[in-house]
Amino acid sequence: MNLIDVVERLFDQYGYYVLLIGLPLDFIALPIPPGNSTLTYTGYLVYLGLLEWLPAYLLALTGACLGVTITYAIGYRFGSPLVHRFGKFLSIHPDFLEKTRKRYDKYGEKLLLFVFFVPGVRQFIGYFIGIIRLPYRTVATYAYGGTALWVTVFFLIGYLFGEQWKQVFNMVEKSLTRTLILIGIVFVLYQLVRWILRRIRRSQQNRE
Image 1 (cartoon, helix red, strand yellow):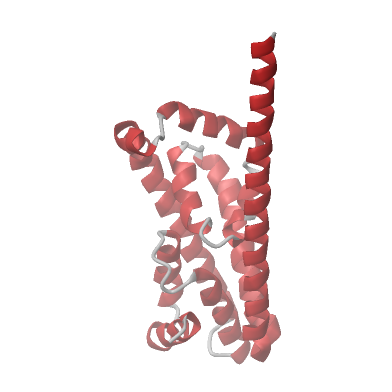
Image 2 (cartoon, rainbow, N blue to C red):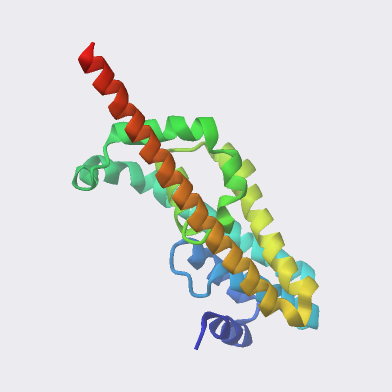
């Protein structure tokens, strides 16, 4: 049984409750049902007339925002103390969190509008922004905004493409996976270049 079959069975049994309970579980890193396919199938059920579009969309948005809020709260309440106590075993130190926070302040807010589309990152980002103590006002603006964008896009895939939703969904999933791999490669190359340049500078400084 594949994941889409699981989503279909859950909707058969629980209807709208899948959105209010299942989507938060996806963010908590218990992705059964998986968020992308859940939202797309919701749109398809609306297309078929089996669900009303307004309550379906609002419950999907509520469930997703609830997932962000729960993981943010967990990261905010427990993440930093755990890093201070056990981070040394993972080579994660408090000063690392501070550096990460400064980098996020410089580059990260607008990325929150798009990270929810990236498999794996969506299940981690709520904890992360909680651990670095991102102000809730920023969470409400960018994280909830990104969540709304994610919900809307996958909801519309199911609703607009109807009977072809599986084909379009699979195409989008493959594109996201390829994009994630490309981003990973670029990031690794970027870090490698930075490391090489640092070694060159140190070598020049030692000669001087």
